[in-house]
Length: 247
Image (cartoon, helix red, strand yellow):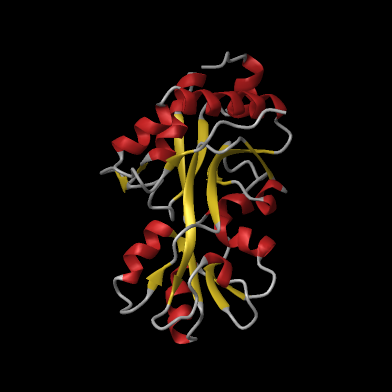
């Protein structure tokens, strides 16, 4: 793992403990809780590996949504934030390259004429999506013709059904579960994006960021991330992200 200097520890763990913000809404990255209520899964394990490399204690700080983590950026509430890297969030946080990817696609209702991902972004099609989700932020930046309706995560299904919307955007694994409750509905093949799960750090910490970037690349190359995926039973749902592109 990359060399640790006192300056890096000062930037990453200024209190002497690494405070890691964990998104509790992603069931692939947080798969369970301990008896004490602490999150477990690939994301908490990644945070623990970082703390161990720094040789400092770890404190996991759970947040209901990734938006809550990004909103707390710069407030000294956390030292690293494990969430999807998106341009809107990059305005307030700096990110490593992704360590894992999750496929995002659409569910369409029974009788829909939509057959492919490309068919969704058309005039007259409405899309229900969780506000502040990484894939929702991607859609905000990329949907040109369809009507994107972002609502709180727990309201997405009701919004889709009540308003007879044309598509429901979400993680493939989530939508595969939901399609069983909706007779005739289909989950489309392919993806409109892959959510890039990364390690974020507050702005103004360049040494910490460069160290984390190296740590993430080594964790991918050494098989550490693959081991997390295997250990927590999310094979085929969560993938090791490819190596970061070098300029």
